[in-house]
Image (cartoon, rainbow, N blue to C red; front, top):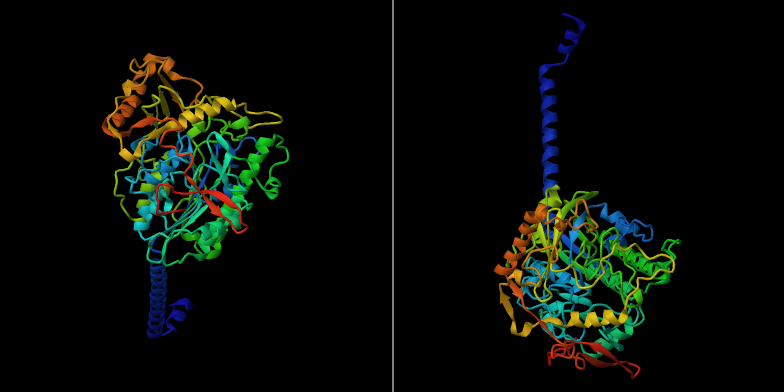
Length: 592
């Protein structure tokens, strides 16, 4: 027997067992305590936050080359947005529609705009009696509200206001603070109708509910107070402060759904001195410099909203979605638009990539960090995706698809194609399938079909203002007759002008993977690419034939659907003067 063996027997066996048993019991107690604590924390979290908070931020007319992390010319700086996007997934193949109204309709309905007559490059102008049809009754805020969320909206609506039933507080939002129409002066908050530049009408509104859930109707005193408090206060500051205030005052016993639709960088290009101070010094073009300052303002505003979430202690439990509504505006009155969609072709108003492919990203619990995804994603996908994340099922058939596998597990896209346009009235359609994009009948509603680099020096993006205005009037006149719900069941896409023969004169095809700037039309080689184009064409034809396509009517701007005199009211101010203000004029017993 050696010394080591003797030393081992010096310790009594019973004491060793007791010691080991004590350790085991102690560890077991620790495990039980930790488990109880974990369950307690989990229970507390479940009771306090049964579902994640959701903050959806939408920029206005933000082009692909207009955000820092895509910008190739070092003339836009958005350091916070760049950093925030690295906390989640950048959606590099995210698609919307070419202008505001169709995109916002698609975002909230989860359905293609041609389902309810809001397709194409057409928007709801001030004084127009139209709105998102009330038959679309499964909107994203309604889905969230039914799931127990408190729903808030700040910013731009642009889905109609002629009736109280069209307003955000009737479409699922508990609270609204923002503008009804397409845009307004950033300081006076006044807007005008197309072609009536001398008519200035105040477009900033606040709507909430009474304690019993009924609508709180603003009085003249309420409206006057709002005007007095906000006149000449920069709108981005107002929207950001309101969003921050909502976050600060939100009762955490309920999950929060907050939509913030900024006006930036939509024209007019107005920014504060501190925003210009953040613009790169080498940006020497006045229009592009103003645009860059608007992007600095947006970047700072988003930072303040995220800071508010962190101060509230709910950032880690919040899904944040950021996107643009359409491509950058590259031309406008006197060329003063300033956007850039480089390296993509075209811009706002067109179905080229520059008009519909826009920046977007998502951040939140369970979302992988610092990921760039090239998977196909569409603006209609947010409704079904968020519904899945919060555990509810939409009540209506959607065109959007659930993308949770892509977002949570870096899986493939759940969609293989996107219908960009399907518009029988102007004989145009467009579809993306995989790497290919097919145009039928045309490529958009304005001839902005070049690849535009950002403005430099004394450059201007020449715009024939008179021609643009005439086009705008025609576009505005293309409206859906909602009152009669005129839906045409089925449409033969081959009836489109010059399409029946399926020739290069009527069809064009591009490979977006190898030709992202859409410079080489593959359909000039008809025989080689006929089968690919025909497969995509058949999808369009099936959608048109089997679905309800909104029947659009050509309406003159003086038609009964555009009211040029009654769509605003006079608000008496404290100093004895008055100011015009938009309101839902078709409801005698309601005011805005």
